[in-house]
Image (cartoon, rainbow, N blue to C red; front, side, top):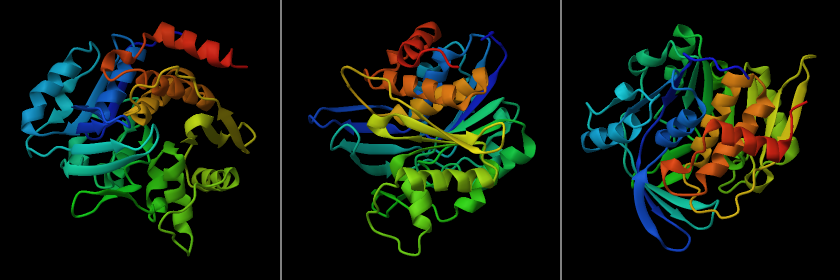
Amino acid sequence: MRSATGRKVGVLGPIPRDVVVTPAGERFEKYGCVIYTAAALSSLLDAGDTIVPVSHVRQRDEAPLKQILGSFPNIDTSGITSAADQGDVVELHYVDQNRRVERQASFMAPILPDDVGKVLDADIIVCVPITDYQVGQPTLRHIKEHSDATVVLDAHGPTMTLARGGERYPRAWADLDVWLPYIDILKMNHEEAGSAWLGKSVQVAADPPKPSDEELRDLAQYCLDRGVAAVCVTLDERGCVAFYRDRSGRVAEEFVDRIEVKHVVDTTGAGDSFAGGLAYGYLAYRDYVVDCQYGNAMGAQRCTGTELNVYLPREETERQIREAYGPRT
């Protein structure tokens, strides 16, 4: 791959103050979501590239966040604002490495079309909302109508909602069809895929099973038929699967094994990090399988510690990918 400086990436979503309780009972606080995506991208992109996070935060958090992200040479923090003095505070109680109980104690003001002017000239825009109102369909539509950027959406946002007391619950993505025309790459986990596909059933179960591989294929084809270029589904220990159309126009399906982590420290932000790797892979290679390899690498690196210094330099990440997957044929 030849380096192409001057690339620009927008990252839309919250930067919550996370209160994390691990399965072992350890408790700590840190910032999350967009901060992971931006830091992962920073480790992969060149110094001449630019990452612009767009987020609304509490006034008390604006200066600390800009100090943290401003330490990365290719992150522009001007899109982080606190005029409304609204930002997310989220409590995450982990049952095990992959399951957690969530409660939102405070919420950010949504990112509206008027907020995205700084990133309309971006090459790619990564949306990593964690709740349904944060980056809405009207904002994606505005981006598509006023920008040539490739849009990556993490389905965590539209498949999660808040109860009045702040409890966070999965929701059926019943208006999926309204969103699909404005998404280029749709990233979701296994449960979110269930909210998108099983939620369309006449019978909506309170705790639906995870979709089968056949149901994932049906969901992917449904999305591809409505304008999405690729659907990437993370599958925990199984890695992830990418669906896209090959040169003949048929739906291709490729599983990408996970990258092993010898000692998992903290899985918070693994999905946000995966989204950053996915976006970089697309910018650099335009190959959806390679995109998922970078996504897996960044998600794996995120799990190795609690700080932002877990992300390796690009050369080491590329070595990690070659060791895990070999050369791409």
